[in-house]
Amino acid sequence: MSEHVYKQIELTGSSTKSSDDAVSTAIAKASKTLRNLHWFEVTETRGQIENDKVAYWQVTIKVGLRID
Figure 1 (spheres, rainbow, N blue to C red):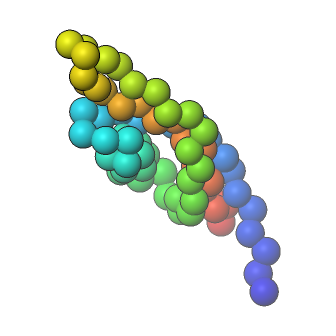
Figure 2: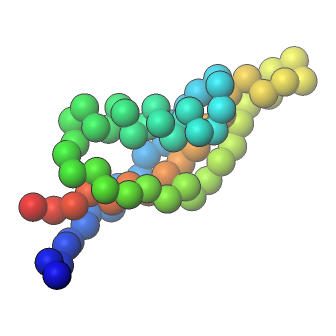
């Protein structure tokens, strides 16, 4: 069994659609400049309300990057 080492970063994604989409947005953007993204953990969820409706979802995640 090989042993892995991870670096952990924090990202916040946003979306007008859903909290899941906010997570996907953050991961997709990060994957353009980072490699070996391996896992994520949602640490905070919040949103913005406009006209009595959810206008934006904002989700903060911790992401683990496997070190080569």
